[in-house]
Length: 426
Image 1 (cartoon, rainbow, N blue to C red):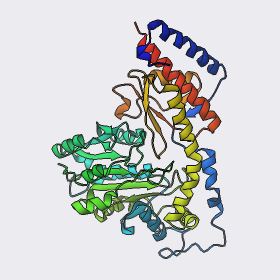
Image 2 (cartoon, rainbow, N blue to C red; image 1 turned 180 degrees about the vertical axis):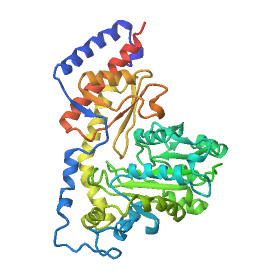
Image 3 (spheres, rainbow, N blue to C red; image 1 turned 60 degrees about the vertical axis):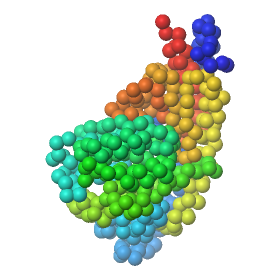
Image 4 (cartoon, rainbow, N blue to C red; image 1 turned 135 degrees about the vertical axis):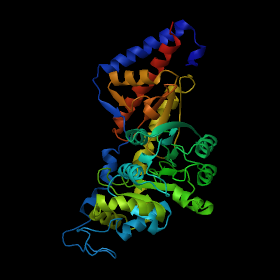
């Protein structure tokens, strides 16, 4: 099929009629397919099942810094687990704080702490006249949700193939003291799968913010989540801020949520000693210590970073065919029609599709009517407002692959139908 924009009006209508027939046939099946969230599927969850029995009742539950992991204590986590995450993130163990099962929860708590206590000798954020955050977009909807929850004004920053547009970031950060932070998924960004280039990381580390209490929320959720044989590499941000003397500027987060079990993983934060001192003031009142048995379970199961990386190869074996099928379907069904563009990530959990301007909401609606649930159009932008109404996030991980194939076929039909409707508007 030729590019739709080159077709005569009657040809567009004929194509629409063919697609409508296929669409109605799918609707008649009463399907219930879900590509809305980046959840591991059952096949991935099963990979880690042996972890459930790694601790036995007659085990010794003591480690070097904790006489009994079943009891209270160890606010920032047990030493061996801190070392495991330190090796994964490439930081010193003294800079690691182990939390509960959710890095999102740690990020929420971090913002809450800065709102209440402040940092770098500045007033708490909730005592300052105005607080703003930079939000690269398309981006992670839950970042935007946390920011909006605390009443922080969000400023959209465009994404490029190398990460956030650093010309925009540098200009805004250096000129406005109300800008207190920026969100970023630096490797395999959500949803585009973009990894920050070396230059971008170095520019982050060299920022000259007008606000002394400016913080980079470095959400390294997909730090080891490669899905093919050509993985991206990410420069270590902490190595770079040591060179610029700005260690306090970066807060890094990661977890095993998509390594073991999302509901029972381990989350970690890497931060400077100055930052950790601030956060411990809050955590000292918030908890007497997180789940050390779960920390111990992970350490016993993996042993070290190499064990984690070997485990991730099992995830790759599950995910690579899924992403390959999604991308092959997009290439086969949509390439050359002029109705959509999409990313081809080397890792992470998503494929980002930009449909024809003004069509994303219509595509999502058509899919829903046919039994395919997608992330809401606009969710990848602050306040849910995509200025072009074009970006759609696909999450290929959760459905069984036979359902995913149907979902992708329906998605492509809906993309073409929405484009044809737009092109034949009176």
